[in-house]
Length: 193
Ligand code: SF4
Image (cartoon, rainbow, N blue to C red; front, side):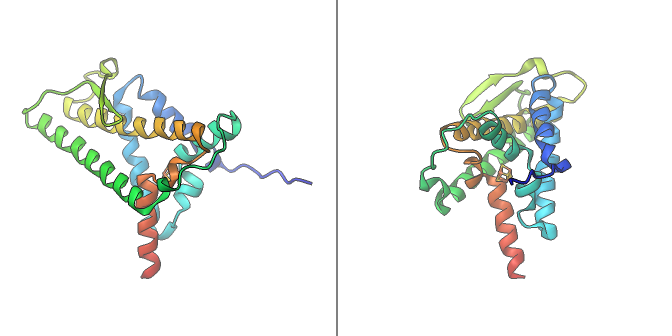
């Protein structure tokens, strides 16, 4: 008889991630919570947790599983092999890090008064989408600028991950996810210690 796996609290972290993305449609200030998520993944793996973040605590990975498995929105096709190649994973990581550096750079320009705050989010490294209704003076323009940048990056990864889940299979994004790649590098380095 098939055993039903008992759910743990961590199986519901997709709700936290979904709430994060929904709140970003109402107030850009919530985008800062994304740093907590990225930072926790790094701390867990530096502390010797290996890939436990990806396997148990990543709400975004769980969203992809629900899209594919709960809502059956997936073709369950094998993704192209180049997606998981070392070259592509590291190139994508470099692009991700450069984009993150650009988010910080633009924030510094706004802090120095050299540039006005852009009330837009940058999607797919290409499109500046107006997001002005989410800004209130509850946060400073400098904090808001970083939040717009971070949210654009997070939403881009979510949309790409969902599209890949539908076109291929759940968690196809995870084979080249920058955070997954970084935590894997840290795990390998720790294993050699
Ligand atoms: S690879 Fe990325 S998206 Fe997938 S579970 Fe890990 S951190 Fe989350």
